[in-house]
Length: 494
Image 1 (cartoon, rainbow, N blue to C red):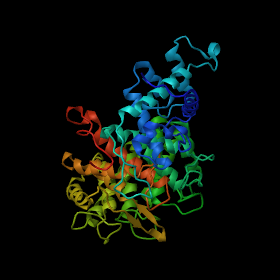
Image 2 (cartoon, rainbow, N blue to C red; image 1 turned 90 degrees about the vertical axis):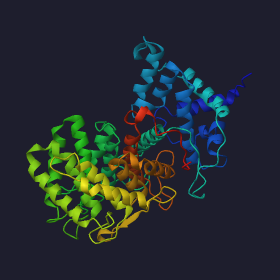
Image 3 (cartoon, one colour; image 1 turned 90 degrees about the horizontal axis):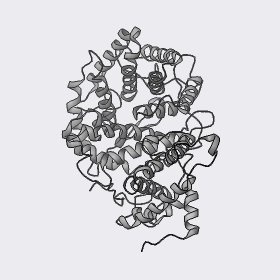
Image 4 (cartoon, one colour; image 1 turned 120 degrees about the vertical axis):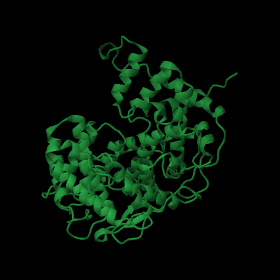
C-alpha cells in the first residue's frame, strides 16, 4: 500500500509550490525553500549538498516528474503553473488563467474571481514528487566550490533537454535580478546596474531566442540607451564613463533583436547611431580597440564589433557598403594576426589562447552568412587548435585581457564551447559534449559561477551564449534519427 505523507508536510510543501507560481520555478529563490529538502532531491544530489546544488536538483526532479509522471491535462497544468517549457517567461496571471480554463472551459474572472482550481493541481505535483524518490538511484554529491572537481552529480537526462533547461533557467534568473532602475546587476544580484553588463546579458538572451519584445527586456535596453554617451557609444558602466567597443557592439546586437521583434522606428534610429559609432571608431586598416584611440586593436573587441556589424547589415541596407567594407578590413586583420598554430592571441603578436580562438571561431561562423565575406580558410585549423587545447576533464584555459589596465576574464570553457559548437562539423562532437559536461559544473541552479570568481552576471552571459550554441547543435531534429546526443550522459563525463 502506498504511503501518504503527513498532512502537515503536505500543507507546508503545497504552500512552497504555490510560492513558485509567481516567479516561475527557473526564476524562484529556492535556496530557503523546504522543497529542496524533499527525499527525492536529497537522493538525487547527495546528503550534505549545498543549498544551491539542492535547488538545481529540485528543478531537475520537478522537470522529470512533470514530464514522466503527470499525464495529459495534469502535465499541462503543471507546465503552466511553474512556467516550464513553452510557458517559461509568461506572466503569472496569464498562466493562472490558462490553468483555470484548462480545468473549466467556462471559467471567467467575473464569475470565478480568485477561485482558480490550483490546490488540487499542486497536491498532485507534490504527491508525484513524493513518489519520485523510489525511481531514483542514489548518487554522489554535486561538486560545490568547496569540494574537489571530480565529485560531481550524475544526470540521466539527454543532452538537449539538459542544455535547454540550463538556458531557460539562466534567462529566467536574469529577469529575476533586474534592478528597479531597469538595468541589470554588474556582478551579483543587488549590485549596481552597469551598461556593459546589461548590454551583454541582453545580447546573450537574444542568442538564446528569448522574446526581445518582452517589456522587461525593453526596459533594460532603454536603460542602456538612456545612459549612453554624447558620442553615441555605450560606456563601460554609466553615462560619462569612456565609451567602449564591447559594450557598444553588444548593445547594438540587443537593439537589432528588439527592432526585428517590434519594428519600432526608435530602435532603428538607435541601430544607426551605434553602427556609425563602430564604423567610425575602427582602427585604420585594423580591428577595434577596447577603448578606441587609446591602444591597438584587441581580438575579442574586434570579434564583438564584427558580430554586431554582421547582424545589423541586413537591417540597414542604406549603409550596406560602409558596413561591408568595415567587416572586410577587420576580417583581413584577423587573417594577418592568426598564429602559425592556427590560434589567435589577445592582440597582434600575442601567443595563441584557447578562449580567444573560441570567440574568433564563433565570429567567423557568423560572417559565413555575410555576402562576399568568406571565412572558410580561417576556420579549419582553428577548430583543431581548440580541440587540441581541451584538457582531459573537458575544460579549457581562461584568458585575462588587460586593455587600459582593465581586467577582463575571457572564460575558456564558455568561449571555446561557443566557438566549436557554432563552427564545427560532426567530427568535433565528442569535444562539444565534453565541453558541455565541464561547463555544466559551473551552473548553480539558475546562474553560472566559476570557482575562482564571485561574479554571477558575466559567467551567466557567457554560459547562456555557449549553451545556446551547443543546444542548437544538439537539437534532436538536426541529428540523425532525431536522437538527443547519442544516449544518456552525466555531469562527470561518463
